[in-house]
Length: 573
Image (cartoon, rainbow, N blue to C red; front, side, top):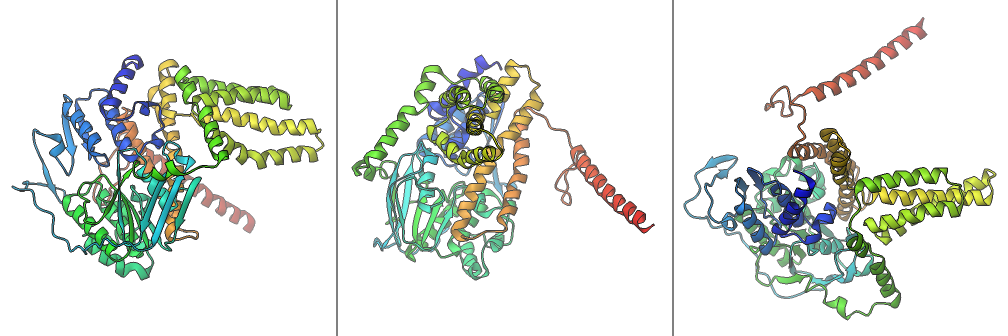
């Protein structure tokens, strides 16, 4: 479909899915988990497919957006296969398939009530303050405002709010995995545990017993029995379903008997029975004096004496009454004035091919220009203007300059010690700044898939190789962001160096490969066919690419062995 026809349909699909109007221009990394689900639905439906397959499409959405997305799916004139725990939002369906232990079975005549799980009586009596956020905010989540909240020992605080309102940001600030650049964070808890919305960030590829010290195994067994996952404690988390991993993450966090437990959507994608068990666990932990901060859309989490905090309405009150220093208000005003939003509204968003060409041109111009402050500044200034108008924040530019400061100082010093004049040495340092300005144009607004789309449309680039190359490049920033978040979450439990963290990061990188393959497949990039089907003893299919890797590895090994043998014979003779 041509871009001129596809763009209005894409914007209509974004609006119908319930996303904000600017979602088309935002980086996927800036979207919340629920907003990503909406974006995926909009992407799948924009081309009017004949077959739609959706796996828990409403998970993580508030009631309003879940209703809008369910209505959008039901309006499609297509065959729809929807996997869900709750069919009510989809109204009348043509057929239902009920699964139990991986097999199709007859659905129950009546909806079974969740089991009665023993729940300790929550007492509406607050202990000492465990956590306090006062107008806390992070520049890493600039779209989310400052938040304020107070949590006491033995209190269960449920944070609710619309999809994309910043509940996960609030929890990350509370846990300390996201640094607060403004406001204050006071914590008296000595043991803090955090179960993020993505349980894989906590579990990695290891089993619960591998993650926990032996002293916590007994408590882990008790919690696992309460959540009905006792048989999974020795199974690698990578071999568990998403719902099982979500409950295992709660096992890991609760087994440490923390003073403060933070959980992000702990019942996401769980059936009624599993959700009831999670609710009972949370209530029992609060009764034992644990402070719990839980973000959720799930209406099933309605426990007596649990305090509900509506975000952002209930978390921004203290921000209005605080008198910020004059310097802080001045910085905020400058940031608003220098934000690229007005420029983008006035001029629009530049073509990625244009930015790519300009960056290459500025690199070349910086090399051939004299190494003087004036010449290099003339190259850097227009590059910075284009970068700011393309979406680069001023604070990001300042951070890059601070990061380059040691390198610039070292370059100037090396030139001076090498006999260069002061003007030439200083110019060499400024040249590095000019290169950085050009890199901002190329890297910060660099959107690989958009660049691939522009290259294929305007330059007639071959579809499959172009999309494969740039889609592979697009996987690197999310992996780096995931690594930083994983390390911050693990440090709550193990402040020192975790030697097995590298293994988990390697596992995440390996698992990015099939995700990339799937992403390419759904974009009609057909990968080479496999030669043999998978079996129980050989779950991974063997193909030509695997054969090539083995031949290359074997060839290198044989060459090394032959070289050692030849050297031994030569030296022996």
